[in-house]
Image (tube, rainbow, N blue to C red; front, side, top):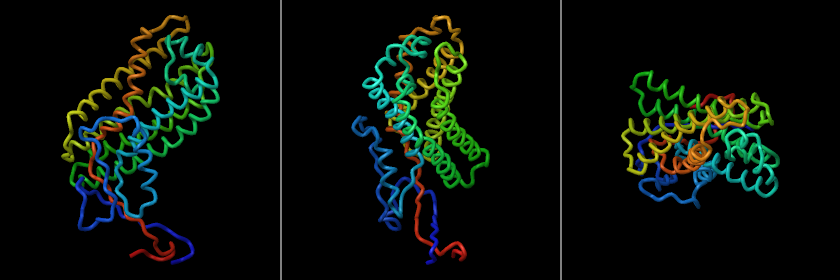
Length: 300
């Protein structure tokens, strides 16, 4: 081997059942999804799973893990930001531009001011990586799973996946433009950066269900309920959040009833770990990593 190292990777889609003859050394996939109750103690299991899988030379890549981990991380960011703001900047929860606009503390309030903003920005950063990795691996799996399908279907998955990845990048703008008192422009730009992620994440989850359905993956009743829940909450949250921000006239009059909107708002955030838990498991991608000769030599 030369002094410079490169990696050789071979990826191919496999059915959900493990191949005992050829890949017995591969770690078994975790399957706690079919009817298993949701546990808050396991709320970050997909993030931890991706971290552990990075040290294996033979691994199963499940694209939906990246999508699930992103949902987990977004929910965790909200919880951590609330704790930081409650302990170190409680005044932010009593009076802020968003509360004056919608009549309650939207979860985004928790990370709009320092010191929570600093921590939340770091926690958001991995979501961009997770979004891009999901776009790459899920598009690859769609092509490998259906090589004879019309190009339009694979192209649709490709566009949806990358639209979601770009949406994750745009979302980081909430830390660039923060809401300012009496400044509708800053409030609207700040809100747009986050609100645009809501329908894109919902579309990505729905597309993942559609891909699993087309691949013959059986769904439990809980998974169908989970899909219906996230779809309904996504539509409601997108409508109420966008109209509450863009129709507000800075006159102290709320666009929507604060109680109703708060229920929808917090309901959407609470649905994120549930959606991650019940994500359908489509075919895996097997990845084999090994050292190869340096780049000056041709690979076999």
